[in-house]
Length: 453
Ligand SMILES: Cc1cc2nc3c(=O)[nH]c(=O)nc-3n(C[C@H](O)[C@H](O)[C@H](O)COP(=O)(O)O)c2cc1C
Ligand SMILES: [Mn+2]
Image (cartoon, rainbow, N blue to C red; front, side, top):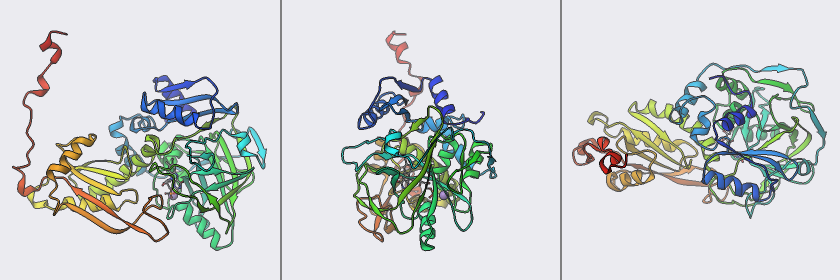
């Protein structure tokens, strides 16, 4: 399949397939946008294109809302997408090309913008502190290597040209900002809203810090990203981006940020966080604002599928019997599926479990055999109920590093306990746990039997 040109290419593809609904009536960015996105996600699961938000511009959501949506980037089936992402991502880096021509998105330019007046930044949940950009790609260069890092961070709208940003501990942008701060330097950033779909995927993937994320996006896309130089900072951004903001994170500045309902569906508290001073904002003609509704399938798919791709490789190295891994629909729990373990490999399931638990997102992991449906929570619970020897098959990893989004984490340095369930059959008890089968089930044709065909 030919790579998608830009976010509009993805919108077109979804619309052609009937997987996008257009909302023609003007809607409000306060609560109404969120409610409509949720309603569509819970019913048809389509992407949503809002033609008019607050009279400001159009907006789009749920472009990446599920395994099937992400599969559109590569022209593969939903079942294949994590494997494809893993294979593609292992390819050679593809360097971007830089154009000096002022094309999109520089068409409409504003200096020191009043951001809230220009953009329909959504206010999604009751106790959110303010409107938030929920899926902006933040571009920065590592001051030591000059390599580009790109990642998604929630950004709080403040007064005028000021924004707040959430830099979670150990994220690359956090490390880059800390380096600059120690040197008393501001960190230059570009914020992209509605950018290249392959860059969007790259930005939500855990790519090693010595890999340039524009090059990695090119690897995923199978062709170079086309960049243009920024106007007020020493950075480059993809020319096909809908909206760009340029600015700096000044050193040593912290202001209250949050709460905002997060991926765990909790608000978290207000705490001092870094700020961004925006110097310039520009956008394409008739720009489309992109957003995602936090804590829904879109966020879990974006984080979960790249994690599945990454984990699959690591798990297969630990044990070639591993067949599949699932981080959806909720990335904090991981289910690993494995072929029957021969006696000679007894116990390997525990090694696999610890590997699954080593990932920062994974709080709970379950390992099952391939006679259990990896996509059916009831079947997984059946396996936990009947196949786990609770004395020997529960693994607790105490004192593990955790995400500071977790409500159990109160301050830096706090840790938590992770849990793993080995719900596979012990090779010593293979006979006892062999699951009964319904003979001839696949041959039963109900319409033929009832005469309703
Ligand atoms: C919708 C969405 C929102 C996110 N919000 C944040 C955030 O506020 N802060 C953060 O540090 N990471 C956030 N992330 C996760 C990072 O973007 C992701 O872990 C990324 O891989 C980090 O990039 P890095 O590997 O370069 O550090 C978010 C991800 C998604 C998909
Ligand atoms: Mn990175």
